[in-house]
Image (cartoon, rainbow, N blue to C red; front, side, top):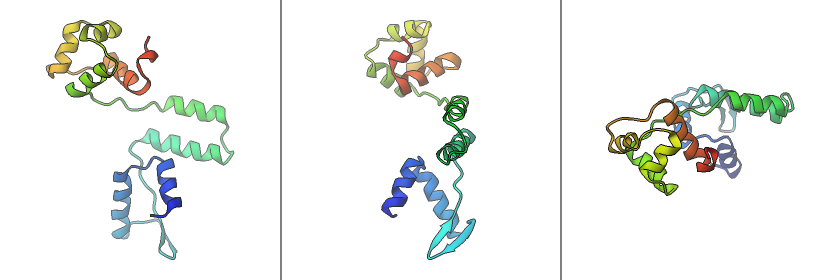
Length: 145
């Protein structure tokens, strides 16, 4: 991988898995164009539609075809997916911010026993609680307080 290509892959936030899948498809002859000199055009399917949309609009913004205001609006509409949280991850997040189960429960406006059940794996956080865990993980505790 060339230095320029490696930098581009990093800037585009293309995961190793996405790149490996694209290389496998290239090897089986699945590509858009052979540009000559061992250079091929291959589109990479992003993990989600939101990533694809924001990536396209970001490219249009860099080209001057979409203004910064529109770019911000698109980014705000394409919110990140909220992932599932394992008991271990919940404990890790709570300990990262030096919170007791009771303190985390107070921030989320839920009972301490609910946090305890999450951490034991008896129930999973859902709805607003899952969103709040996502916000804390991505932006820190200050985003909620």
